[in-house]
Amino acid sequence: MDKVIKHRLDVWEEEPLYWQLIAQIDKRLYQSTLTKSLIEIIKIRVSQINKCAFCIDYHTEDALRNGESPRRIFALSAWQESPLFTNIERSVLEVVEEMTLIFNHGVSDNAYEKLKSYFTKKEIADIIICICHMNFLNRVGISTKTEAV
Image 1: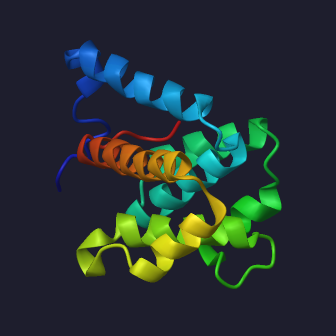
Image 2: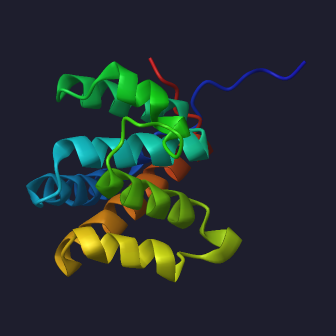
Image 3: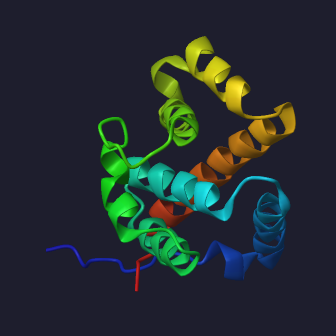
C-alpha cells in the first residue's frame, strides 16, 4: 500500500518571492471596487470547480468572516438554480465557470456581454484577474497536496 503524502512541497517557503508577488495581487483585488463578498464568491466557486479543498475551506472562512451568509455559500455550487444570487453575481459566476473550464470553449461573447452590462472595463479586468489568480492558487495547492486544517 502506498504511503499517503500529506503535503508535497511548500513552494512559498522554497521561494518566498512568489508569495510576495501573489500577495500583492490579492491586496490589489481587495483595493478594487469589487465587493469583498463578490471576490470571495469568485474564489470559492473557482475552488469548488477545481476541487481544491484547502482553498474552499480557507475562502469560505474568509467569506463568513466578511458577512457572507452560510446559506448562499451552501447554494453556490447550484447558483444557476438558486434564487439567492443577483443577476450581477450570476453574470460573474457564468464567467467564473467558463474561464475555469476554459479548455471547453473559452469565454462566450454572451457571458462577456453580460459582464459589460454591469461592470466597467476596469472592474471586468479585476474580475478576470481574480478568477485567474484563484485558478493559479488552486493549481499550486492541488499539485502540492496542500491540506485544509
